[in-house]
Image (cartoon, rainbow over all chains, first blue to last red; front, side):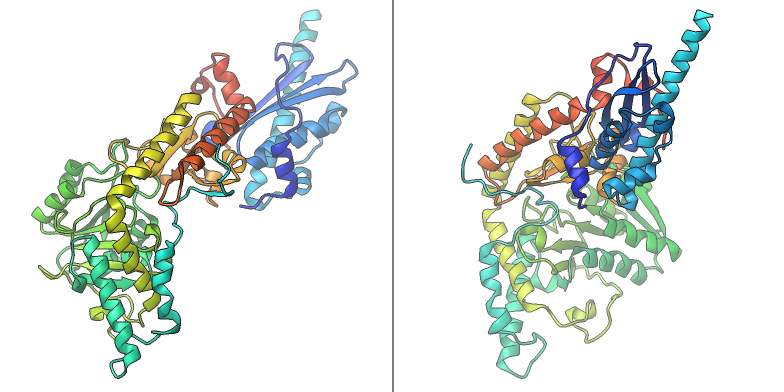
Length: 133
Length: 407
């Protein structure tokens, strides 16, 4: 299969590979996919008190398109509000990376990873708020 | 590291092989000088072509211990497999309707059997053992009075695992069924003899043994005589079993490839085995969590099929772009399912997704193997650093304990 230049570029130079402290109250972690299906993405965000995504990190088990999708996702969401990041659609990733139809599930997984990280962050904050009350 | 390496490196010799220059040389005159139709009986062009075809027939027969009269030319192994399986099923259907094969056979065999199922035949797909081999006792147990054909491969195309065709042949013939062997991956690399295996039909292909693509053969036993219903009707070529004008240059090339393979087999097997072991040991010395798929004891000398835990095969192939190898990962196929050959022997899906097949052949060198070891090790390490699974394992988390959501 021939890869688009952008997929190859992200594969060769992935942005934001790594991990944030998952116990940090300002960090939200999303872990989506399944090893048996051939792709697992972990995407993490650190959110400022003002609700801005200050930092994002990913680790991905998957094909080049899955790595590129998660790399691009972390790049995009840095600096966004949670609402803006929640609004990212997989189709935007498909378009930017020129993913062929057989690789669309990679972009869906990246969208899920963003939403899952945001949901994790929000549930953490709710728990903290509940304790503080 | 040697400076003599040429990039990209071809290490996918189970898929196809480079045509040996000696084979090309033998073929050339039959394009431009002796270009007659081998079926033309009335002039010298035809006689020269026919003579070349008959010489090649003997050469191909010799490598499997057969007579030239038992060789039917085809377009390749897919046609040979189809002709053997459908041809026998259709000719002997009044004797029974049961066929036995294995679940890790080539698609040409499996899909031919599936077609016959639609016509009312019953097919048993034996589950191979954990090492990828057919269990002869399981085969014996599956045979019935209705069994007319058993089709088992000599060596598997993905994992290189060699079946015990002698033991299988004994069982099949004791029950009076026909025995077909898809011997494409083994012939030319390991000794094989149709009588020792009691084979009735054997599929062969030129391009897996340094011959040209587009030509194959089906061995059809003469004593006792094996008959089959042809798929292609026409001029009655090839004893009526496969009509069509013979492709003389390709057939000549196939014959030459067999002569070379037979002469050099012992030495070549030793050399490719040494290179394969150098590759395996070189990788295993530097990486943890690698797994060999299939028996190491009963395996083609040049084949290595290895899974690299925690990384996905296609992403590794992307990193190995200077090396031609293949992966059992789903992502390399359109189906999104990982290799059915690996699944057939019980390899877990995540390891099937992580598999790479290396096929070392006649033209590979030690310097190439060393280059591939370095490249594989560095790319696997890089991808593991990027893998959430590897991170979890290092943290002591059992990946299997996690409730993953299939997607």
